[in-house]
Length: 373
Image: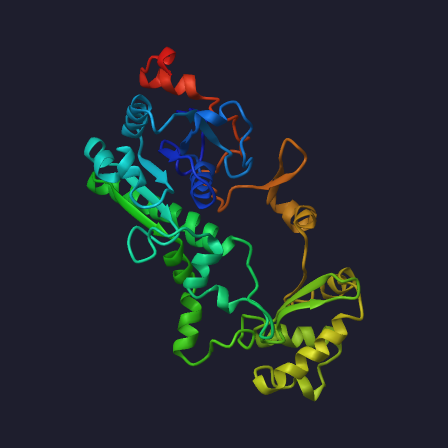
């Protein structure tokens, strides 16, 4: 265990069976908050730099061949010492390896066994391959992104992999850890990206239930249909984000733009007027540069912001004042741990280790003969 680790999860040990995307993101979130996360990597990658220097930060790394019976037993012994496990294989794979939930919980009854998949552990698609875009498509989210007259816009891999996947699994694991401390019994956490995407749509489903949202993309309040909740192109081909939903913020935007007395903007929620309002606003915002508009709206409480690139975001004064980002060794930046716990603050992120960098030490801690590995 890393004795110097701080954070609300200090003292919790998590074993991560090496995977990609949402599983490592879950491991990063737990490690950021002080959990000791040990990642099991493939021997073929031993000594190589981590493929994901941010997602794999704050870890220890051991290489084990999960097709070798000796290494499977080592992995099982390691899991015996853990509070939680993260695995992101297709349903049935860890069972075939002898590391399924029944086998692990029989040895370690307090274990929280976290499973990360796209489709879930059962259902007609459970064994089908897929990626973020497939999961959010079937959950109903992808079809809601983008303008009405174009194909759906791909929201990076934030909705499925990260929000509906890794972040939801982190919530599930921490919730189950609390229950395990109360009851003394662990359990399986089945986190599916389709489920996680669907639950993120709770607000939208509530609006639909009240007749305030339709399936016609680009015509609704939060999908770019509202002229006061969308992005506009500026004269320098950069953008501003307008989010003045509440009437006082809408009034502030009109004031800055000189539109307070314009009858075309008198009825904010008149959907029939939205196309003309959007056309007028697009023309106005196209008349000046993004930074000129950012300066004009600064301090005006209008909910209008510059759309920043990843590079620009790290340099923004607010993000710098908050310490939202910190440097990586190669000069790039990484986001710092979030959320922040003022009573049990987390350590600054540690660089991702070389693959297998901690193998000998972890084996020695388990009492395993290093010469056999």
